[in-house]
Length: 89
Image (cartoon, rainbow, N blue to C red):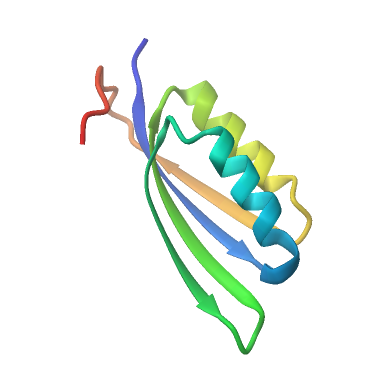
């Protein structure tokens, strides 16, 4: 099955309240996660996270949907047009 590379851009409006929920969901998809970077804005209580993925469209969309259902979390996804066979890094 062909795979694609994707980037998730995530903003946690209330980081302290939503971080655990986000981490649990991302852990469920650890097989497609290739990298993650987070920048906390502690004074504002906001965190910005980017996650690099390599997976099927169904996997990427499922992860995006579950993250988007967390209250106070905004997620946007950018998916490569090119299909690839392997996700070797």
